[in-house]
Image (cartoon, one colour):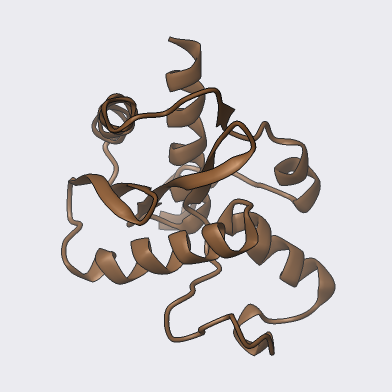
Length: 163
């Protein structure tokens, strides 16, 4: 048995999976709600033994940050870059990545004036937060393979809504 055989399998997300996933769109969402969501996310990170940083940004204001395990300052770049993609496109950053892969294009070659490739990172982990159809902010995770980052963020949102 090789070392790769003992690794847990990574979650798989297709364009179709991501396009039919529920959108986080609620009637209201305050900084206090962001704290509740952040605690749920951090608890999931701990319970799964992950190395993840989690940010919640509302209207450009960082209202929650947790860095657990082996995460550190190097994750800040990825948190901001993934969130920038989710804000610009209004969909999860992993969906942006998967759409480019499906089209056979590279996100970093996208020639669109508003896309700043020095900042934006089309990797999974950022999910937009909407209030009554208006984009308010993002929940972003970074530190593990990007599909794990995305799954953690999606699971945290689902747990928040289920409570």
